[in-house]
Length: 250
Image 1: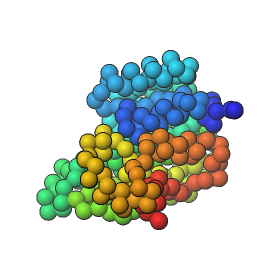
Image 2: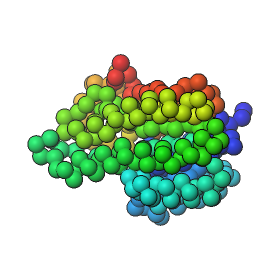
Image 3: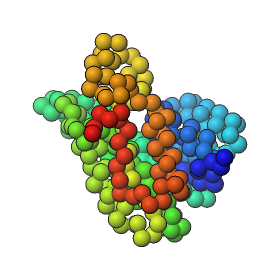
Image 4: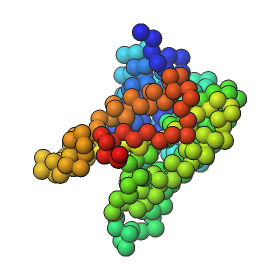
């Protein structure tokens, strides 16, 4: 059976842990060469790149880069093009939370979340679009959240940043669709992470009560949707948001 991403090159921001690492791993399993970014854990990121390169025989490389910084994003895209020759798939996955009730939220907490979660998508998309336009091909995948749809007390900054991704995604899809470049968003629900692993059973059950599928999702389940959106199988899918939430938002 042929691999869905054979011959493609992907750039994934925030790819050293969590959902990002799951995306990197699934892309490599499906035959893609992958560049991914990290901010602080160089040892962990480089270990993941070496593991996947050795296991699958494709090129996987980690880059230290802050997606929220416009100049660093430009340098990153230039470095990836130098090292890989092209970018077929861009996954804007970098994201943070700085939760607080609005009356207690600081300007710094607001700006940090908006810059990392939303401005980063502008930064990377702007620079990665240039080679995609030249190639008349490409898939951009923006990682949003179910919180961008529903809102959540104590997360006005996070919800605003993730809701903004929906409008950005639709606009880019309309701008570059004529050049066979697609842009879609994914809105994960509650996904298993180091944070959810630390929850006690009573707390988990309280979350499950609101999720029709009665469990948290797995990073691989989000990554599988990324594979679909990056592959030729989704060649007429653009401007859409796909929720991966166990029917939480339906």
